[in-house]
Length: 256
Image (cartoon, rainbow, N blue to C red; front, side, top):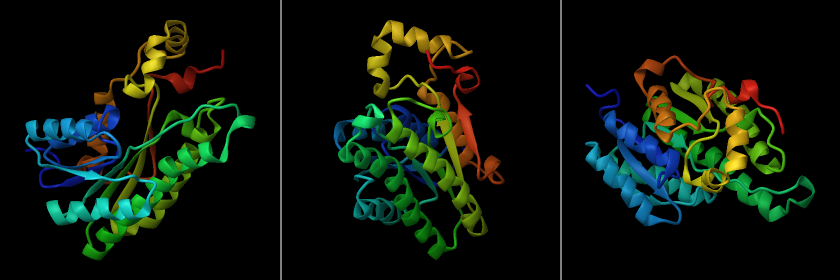
């Protein structure tokens, strides 16, 4: 029997990359999914088609996670259309490169509003509904190795992911009595659309691969496998932890 039969998951930023892979894998495990998108409905529809092909039910909800009313509606639609919301995957994320002295307020707001504010208030909306229904739940944040590892010229990204690590730890303690677990997945370099320019730059890619003991980038499906575990009953006693999935990068990394 699929491990997530009858469960409902919201996966933010699930139109492509890691989010799409997670939504598809959760559906393969029996979950019905809310596919969140901000800009590209055609990508979200492609994810919904994968979920349906895997045997799950999918609904599309347009939501910008940096807007509080959108966060509330995203969770509300899960309950109204699918009858529950048991799993929240905070996957939506952005980055903006700049030398620290050149970071603008607009850059800062763009990154922190999506990566931190969005995850914070979407989790709040998720938890409020579960608390009222007296149901347990799972929060899985797609963080980054940069919640701990430096990333020069990406100070806003590091700040958002470092804060996500501390938020996860705090909520694991506060929400544990409600039966809600909170964990982070911290990927290293993953073969996704966000890394298109990196993949096209052979010298830069080769320098990165030289820092990765396993010698390759992760596949989105590998991140999805870990998310499926954390969403399952096998992980019922797992909370307050970051799971690094980086091919050994953090243990071997040094700036060139």
